[in-house]
Length: 103
Image 1: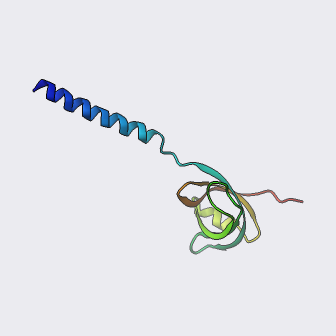
Image 2: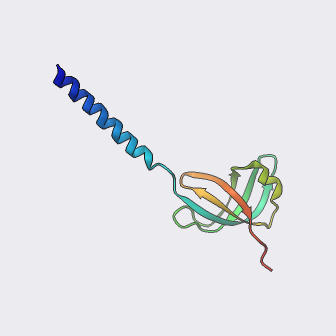
């Protein structure tokens, strides 16, 4: 009976160790996003961006995005060039910044 208990304990510990190892490397990959604001929907707290291609994440396209900080929507206007951080499996723009004007 002791051997059976030890075997069960060893199996449980092995599964637990495997789960912990897998959980450690679950952070999604991040990418830098660049684009031009096409429109701002303050009511929906979204922005439509003409985004450049982000290698490994998305082709160049124009689409509507939510932002991680809804207050940024009030600061953006059509024509602004922005940068943001995006993550695999997530279509929210994080840490949105208006890019400096090129003069």
